[in-house]
Length: 96
Image 1 (cartoon, one colour):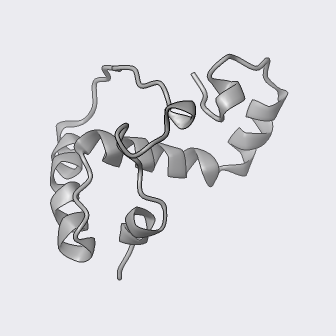
Image 2: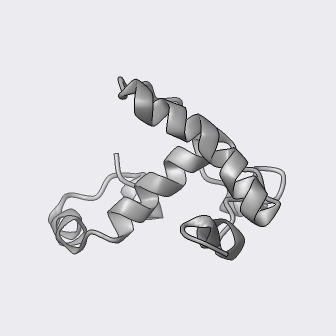
Image 3: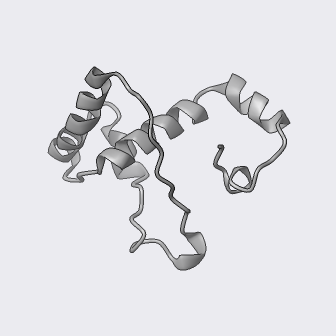
């Protein structure tokens, strides 16, 4: 398996129907102005993941996974975040 597709088979985002009620994560809609070339790649990436793994994530899952991977791989951000006043979402591992 190539590239980031390993993310989908190792740590698949769970749909709400797959996750026990106690573990469900609140979801909120967010709107951002993003370069149309990036939007096109987000739309096409699920087809690539499906071709490589047989798993077809939603575009929302693609964006969420990409951002989560960015945050997790940035030690400076993680150190900075640890010094910030916690928010309700941050206590669950998320940041505003």
